[in-house]
Length: 235
Image 1 (cartoon, one colour):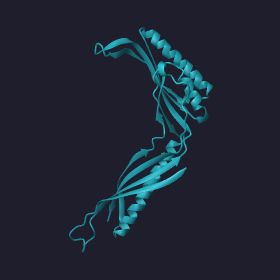
Image 2 (cartoon, helix red, strand yellow; image 1 turned 90 degrees about the vertical axis):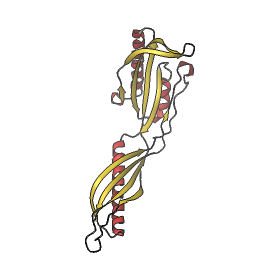
Image 3 (cartoon, helix red, strand yellow; image 1 turned 60 degrees about the vertical axis):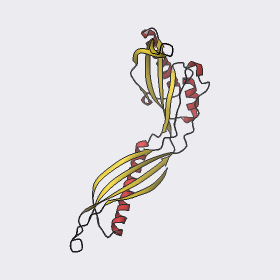
């Protein structure tokens, strides 16, 4: 894990009164931006899949989706993916339409039944094989996957503290250089600037474009950046 700090400084406003030569300097404001970065190697990948079936009979479509869910969960169990790492939405159903270039209208083609599932896989060595099995199903599409870490919250907190500490140190140096005294904090706000996690979108084209293998993964190094904006009083 690696820590680094980037600094962006903006002097927002420093106000002086006409009597500053004979009286205390009027209260002003200084605005500081600090960026804290934490890098780490991910230890899991989050996968989002969709199971969808279309049939002229709604019950048939629903049964196909339920059967695929059962088969999918059996595969997860075979790869030691625990239930806590599997999140399933409710099954949704409705009428399915397809645009016709001949009639230039959306034509009814049947009823759909679909479900979205989120899975966390923490064994990269088995991911390609695991994803390959999923892609053998005609009704499963892998929408995207994203690398992360089981301690992601801890890394984000560390980046927060790095950014805040740096902003304070910078504000103190600016105030000292200007012959002023740093006062109380007026406001703090954070924005997260997370690395895209080197994940990728994966679109499956259906049965006619079904993959013959899995998805190879190479996570590399992930960077989390937290940017803090702090307003200080200066006297």
